[in-house]
Length: 547
Image (cartoon, rainbow, N blue to C red; front, side, top):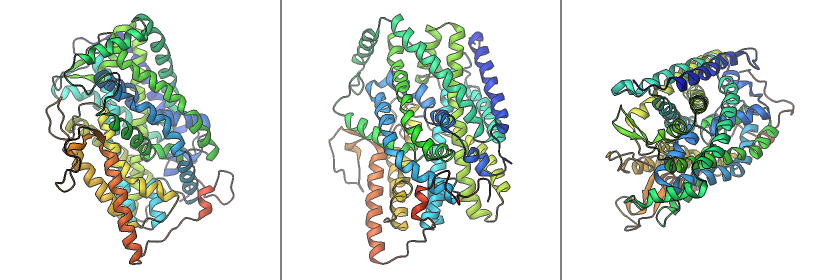
């Protein structure tokens, strides 16, 4: 703790103080009659326009995953880290129409969460409960990834204690995030997202112009990266993919694209929009962030060229690859600009973490508390529960950091992706058809979640020596179906979430066919066909903020 970089820390703290104030002021920004309603606290009054939604979704989807985890993966593994670029390019065409339908039916029926929709679509509180639990658990490692990013920045500035002191920055982040989220709800991250995105664009534009010119140009940067990977005994890295990881790259990109808008925080930002036109404009404009993501990813190679060495985490005694971008900025920029860059990364971690905790809290309140504990809960009681739940979710995120130690921090998000992908049949596909039987969807979920967790559990971490939950890539040689290895000997790797989703869909189809043949009742659909096309100016829309 004696090597604290005071200039960077002071600038970081000053900008952090600004956004903290904004977090509290946000409770009065575009405020409705009361924050004691999930429409207002959890969805910002459902009235965000195009600009606010663009910044909110950008702050929601482009996170510490973008600023810390992807460059760290590029630094350590090379081309595999670029899977994030095609994933964020294809995601918007894939989700445009489902997002519009989800907004419309939710606006008409007053749904706040994807589990609300499933409850209304199939009349099944059990299926809705499974969707809610999945959303909450899958969100926790994603929040953990944000806190890891913030911790990496603080460690670079010299706050790097051993033992429990090494995780004290998480406590600081938790307190700040928890208080203003509790106070202001979704309006806080929506307002702070403006500051976050301005800082991020400033830092990236400067970095991507200045650093290559200082380090000899992009050709020299790529040559340095290839030289580093050539020296490693593993042939799994390099600036090009190899025969064994191409399938992993493709399934990871596709699986991540399918998963992104299944996350409750992504749908929360969609449901907070004013109307369908707002969503359409954002799906066109949001790929601008993908350009930034590609530039950010390349900073992993820039760090190699600049001979950056990750800082040793004194809490674990091991190098922390999440620090490569902060160390790069610290070594190549002046102290004042490095402080701005660190603040951009730190704020870029807290904005999505706030949205994620709100979305998880909405799931708890609507689909567990109100459904099973207090059916006659008033809107005020729902809002109170959501505020309290948003605090507890953050504790769960810290637990993921302490007890799951994957090789790359990006695996925190990819592990969550394996889980959230299993809600695709019940949430995304059911926006279009009710062909699947609710018991088929439940059976598919059980198989997908169960097998996905088993595969994740059996993936070791060679870097840390741990035997379980070491990543999300599975060699086909290790693919086991009740002890049978259909692809024995194959070294091809594949994303676990994709395998689990295929099994989920297969079981859902089989059980649906059986249930239909036996004429098992499939619940009552509360929605109407016209609900899926409603827009903001339609008559008879449910009034916002009314139970």
